[in-house]
Amino acid sequence: MMALGRRGLFDLEKHFGFYGAYHRNPVNRAIHVLFVWPIFFSALLILHFFPPFFYLPNFEFSLWRNNVILLWNVAFLVALLYSLFYLALDLKAGSLAALLSALSWMGSSFLATQLRWSLAWKVVLVVQLVCWTQLFIGHGIFEKRAPALLDNIIQAFVMGPFFVLLEVLHTLFGYEPYPGFHSKVQAKIEANINEWQETKQKLY
Image (tube, rainbow, N blue to C red; front, side, top):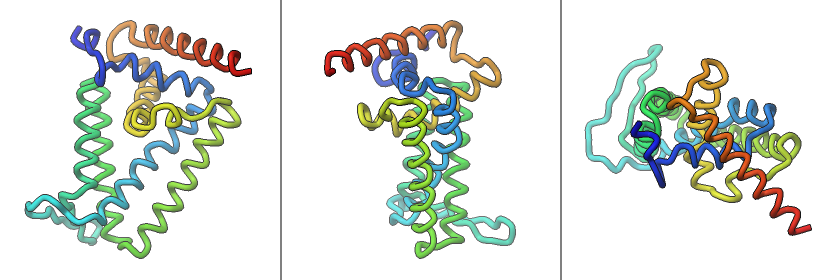
């Protein structure tokens, strides 16, 4: 299979093995499932207030008697890049992740239109504070390991939404990008955990 030969940036096994090593506790995983996508959504919401940089006609439509304007701005570009990357990682789960990214862009655009800047930044601030607090609680109290962002901030921010989705698909439907994926990932997780524990022992 083509997925088996992927390396580097598109090595899903490697990425998932790294992320999974920081999210083994079931409570911590549940917290991430609940709060990672709201972080992504609210980030798109604030990005809607950056000036558009594509000189293309804006798409405007009515939703529940309210006008919604979709701007070709930073929020659109971020959602597009996330979607394309998720599709490159795995076509099936990536298609669902891309759909969720697109819906997040459209939904955040609707909220941006309704809330305006004066209220939107306050909503984003509250959502980000609440969500990040929950994530740190999950790591500090339940996982007892620092978040992945402290070791690889890009991987943590970009991969987080996709991995919680993949985790849900596997838990509910037994989904694997290809046969044997999770057994190979589990081996990488164990190797990462062993390396981390050896490092801790050397420090103490």
